[in-house]
Length: 445
Image 1 (cartoon, one colour):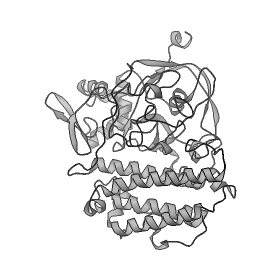
Image 2: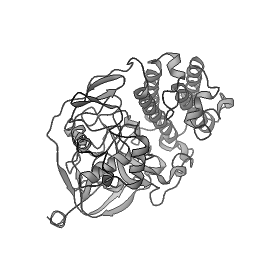
Image 3: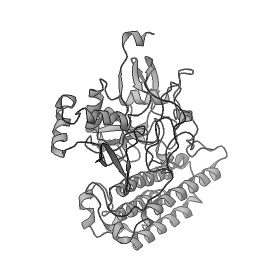
Image 4: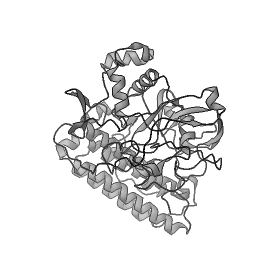
């Protein structure tokens, strides 16, 4: 059974799946926080990020609020720290000055919360109310912790000092991938009403009818982006929107984050190690404005969110939308670069088994892909179980990213999963691919 399908044999199997996912997720959290000493845990490595020790206690506090107190109806473990770990009350830049739990106390706290969760899991009924149906509340907490694990991974990328994380390199290319793919005009089903652990902003399923368009078969690579840099892309305002050019000037952008000149070429810093830039890897650590400018320079544009999802999910043979480009089954090591198995994007062509029916590659994993779309609810959106997960972010300030990165866990990544961030952000593992309107001769071929 996949981690988020409805269980075939009832509550006991669902309990087992939940326990496995909780364990797997906590092991990742521990690996990210145990990799550094206490001084590193309490330090703020960037004003864009929290101290790692804040993230650690925050995931425990969310687990306490939702599972121990709400689902379990148990007494609070530490009501006195609720405000300290409320992400809306405490801006990231201010978190180092708070009276946070020190590392040993934070670890003890999350351990105590988890013990109580295991205890209540044994007796939970999954049909009592909507919050626990199909184990949703537990799945929400798993995904929340995995999202913070990816945030902590991004913090590791920003920290100074000796490298502390290690992983094998991703696989080499197994297929030649390039060019563009035509997506025919017509309707498809966007979003989901059936995936039991899907979050509120992925719901409900609805029909979207799109004109024909063309989308890149692979994410934009370092080599392609390097050509934009070499052609003076950062010096020509004509490629940039007014807001993008203003940000480029103010932030003094001249290349993707973590790039530096290396003789006649470029080097890229990965978790404390510098290595020569590899041209066939997807470019990473670019903001939305940079992606938009590159697309204009290339004579294209960024895909809309609906265009991205149709390319990723729509099966022309059946007309249905899949959970993933390759089908409905959970990703394996053959499908996508996920789960922090590797510490950078895989070269283009490394995952032919993960391609969509139309032949679009590496839509899942490697890099989050910027889209042109601002963050809104799908038609018929209903906030659940709280407005602060999605609804408070709706509006023109945020752009949607899709597909996950090498640092995204499979539990927090599927064909309907939506991420969002400010268009200036690039400390995240963000890249992109381009699209364009289909020409009449293409659309009717």
